[in-house]
Amino acid sequence: MIGCSVERYRPAPLIPADSAMAFEARRLSDSGLRAFEEAALGRSISPWPLVEWDLQSLSLAAEYFNPELAEARARAAESQAALLTAQRRPNPTVNLSPGIPSPYLLTLDLSFPVETAGKRGYRILEARSLDEAARFDLAQAVWAVHSAVRAALLGELTALRTLDTLRSEGQAREEQVGILERTAAAGEIPRLEVDAARIELSKVRSAADAARGEVAESTAALAAAMGVPLAALRETHLSWTGLDAPPAAQTLSSEEIKRDAVLNRLDVRAALARYAAAEAELQLEIAKQYPDLNIGPGYTYEQRDSFFSIGLSATLPLFDRNRGPIAEAEARRTEAAAAFVETQARVIQRSEGSLEVYSAALNELTDAESLVRLIESRQQALERSVRLGEEDRLELVDTKIQLAVATRARVEALARAQRALGDLEDAVERPLAAGDELPAAQDLTSPKN
Image (cartoon, rainbow, N blue to C red; front, side):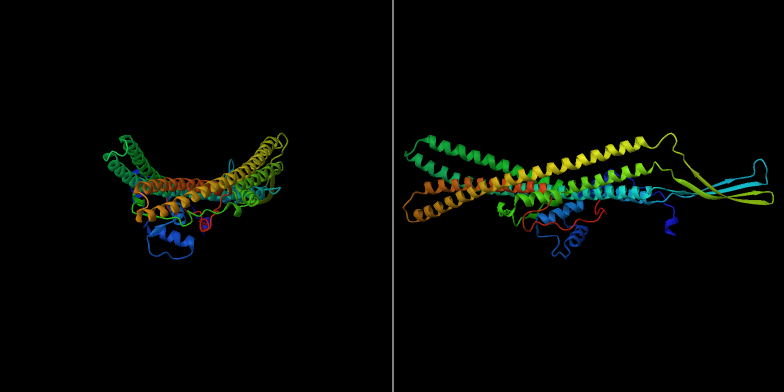
């Protein structure tokens, strides 16, 4: 009988050297990760490991490896155990009194506790509400990890693009310096123009070095968000299909965003569950004004005579009617109500502000893209003219520099728009771009400790 079995202590020692070694051994080729992602996506994955890792696959890998989620799962499992505790019924008690002073006297009393006024139901309701809040906290932890992965992936991809534009600008400026050197040697321009061009080239090279540092920093941030060592991301090709096409602001109405913030935000739902728990706690404390009963038969043996009796006992509420705990529970319910209203108001304000920031960032991106297209058209025209001998090459090189600068500005505008979109997604806690949908949340069992 499982219900009558006795749990035994099972040691689970922590050995820092072993856990550190296990962390360093984590790789994206892990077969357990493959099974985890296939279960989440509902399809087989081939080839493995993936050739390209996108936002969805990286987020699932973070859900598999990240130790913060292991902590959140443990807290959720604790709330489930608390629900089991709340559901338990009090055990009966037995009292055996041997023959003292007479060796022929023996008394046996059996007592069955009876909870009154629905106390057990209120206790279960409170525990169930807290368990629901813990599940929402777990889901919010999953979202927070996804948000961190998104931010790090955006940082790395935009840093790589920025580095590419700086390399293009550096090549164009090197060509510009060469042309100016030859022109200055012919005495057609002063040497100061060459020196100015060299200074700009040096600035671009310094900016390229800084961009390489940003790439390394973003890679480290991505590894930290995923819960893997840096070595796991070496030789990994990252991609983001919808990076250059953030959704138009017109597709995200203010009313829809506010509704999502109120209905979908996990902290709002968790606050509502905690209020329900506080309500149940107050009902439980009020019910405790009514005493529980202890009912049971009694048996007494004296010499050759047997006596049977029925006993009934209860605590008389003469001096205390549980007013202190009731007042405390009422205060906690008021506090939970205030926390819910504050959370709801904050997320509504954040969602409205994030949408406005995102709309402004999209306008900036549109202007930057228009400028890039304009300079590209000019460059194409100049290339035709240079081939025909109608223009000198220096003007074409200057246009290439302008195009590199404008392209870098477009990358920066795109990064700001995507960051604003990420803030807006955090406000409603759901993906808003097509193709960025997340699979259903995993169960409470931590896949990787």
